[in-house]
Amino acid sequence: MTTPLSKKLSQSQIRDEFFDGYDEELELELEEGLIDHLMDSFPGETVEEGTLDRRVYFKELFRLQGELVKLQDWVVKEGLKIVVIFEGRDAAGKGGAIKRITQRLNPRVCRVTALPAPSQREKTQWYFQRYVNHLPAAGEMVLFDRSWYNRAGVEKVMGFCTPNEVEDFFRSVPEFEKMLVRSGIILIKYWFSITDEQQHLRFSMRIKDPLKQWKLSPMDLESRRLWEEYTRAKEEMLERTHIPEAPWWIVEAVDKKRARLNCINHLLTQVKYGEVPHEEVQLPPRIYHEDYSRRPIPSEMFVPSIY
Image (cartoon, rainbow, N blue to C red):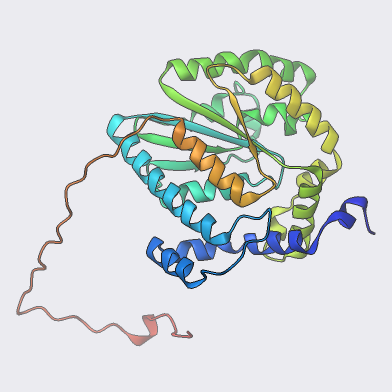
């Protein structure tokens, strides 16, 4: 059945949404020198108004990822502790932004925490307890793909907690976050904002794409139905937890590529970092022994060369 939203979706929107999901393969393969070569190869190409040129996007992404590497080195050198929270509606692009941030970083320094639903035991603990276990030590960055703000969003809207528990959360979370900041943690909070129309488009694309259908859970579909309830919950959350020590930052995320670049660029401004000098790496000479010879490996141990 055609809905008012589906009538508004243009072919270009559907095309952009489809190709965006497969851009990461190109990002993994292209190096900065190749990007420059490609840009020189299309000197006369025009850019559709309102869209971000893919070549500009990739060039800026590589530049910003280079700065993230510098930030990572600084975090290790100075023993910083950084927590970055990513919140937003389902299909808002949080995961895509996190993926581009961590893509070229050391997972021992920068790690992602995406907790499942709490276990029966965790439900009896202090609400923040299971999140505390994932906070960073010195020299670490932790990116929370959803966080303790589940209580103000999905748990509240879906009735997984009582109104009293929600109210207790709102009373507690400012003090909890102030305590984290006093302990030396740099706490940065992002809300990825998309429109009703854009979420409809992204959900529709996931339904049609067999490689992305796994992303749609019954909870996601229910969140689509309860759009307005989530809006009211978001508005109360932002109003009651936007504090000077840990303010919220809104990322306009209808355009995924712009959202990623804007988020990474802003993240880099939240920490004063410098370039850490590194000693030049020298490849040591390999040691050779005249009596050494490689032993044969049975052919059945090899992966078949299909390609």
